[in-house]
Length: 283
View 1 (cartoon, rainbow, N blue to C red):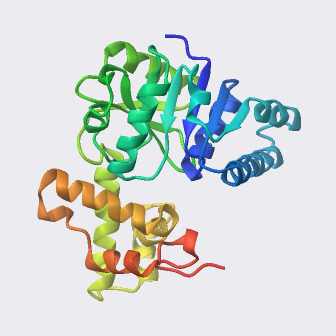
View 2 (view 1 turned 180 degrees about the vertical axis):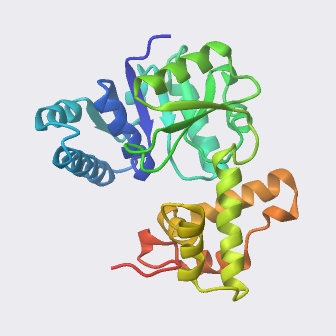
View 3 (view 1 turned 135 degrees about the vertical axis):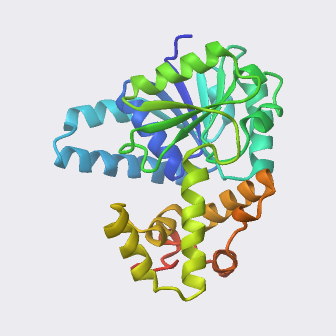
């Protein structure tokens, strides 16, 4: 499978990061979202990210210009009809993804790979929404995509060896390190990370320590670059809760029960950095 043209559905934080790394690697990218305003903001964010790379001498201005020319914006999924792989990076909600993959199944050419950037939802379950489950795979990038080296490559029960190999090779062409993961709730990254964040929420709720103390223990005691509550704010508390709910439902194990404080904060709209308030407040 030779992949030259890439579709990215969803121009949010993950989608624009994915589009950026593909464009920087010389792939033609079709970036889709529901409005032109969202797409314009995404491309502006990509440009800003590249500007920071230029300041760090990791990219030249000429390379930035060349990369941006590889990105085409669209509000129509039909524009992805000739893409060799389409990567979905929309909201982490199965019902929404189901509708998206049903549409992508109709739009995409017969030999296209349909990938999802889901961080926890079953690839097998998503693949079952299509008539081509052998061509569906998980390609879970880490945030921020231009910086983080890891990509979890997740096989559904029907994913073909050919599709897996093509996706693995593609990740390597981006300069990423692919890791093969079986299709279980949370895969590896979030099965390990989210219970830690959830336990930090319980530790705060139970008054064991302050938010600052909890984060300091993990930073200085475990050499983590940031504390779990700071990280939760960066990821988004709604996303953390969604993943914990997937783990709890998928394993039917009380150890994955979402912390009541986490649920309460999401209900209040305190989602972290993106709403200027989470476990910490932001300007």
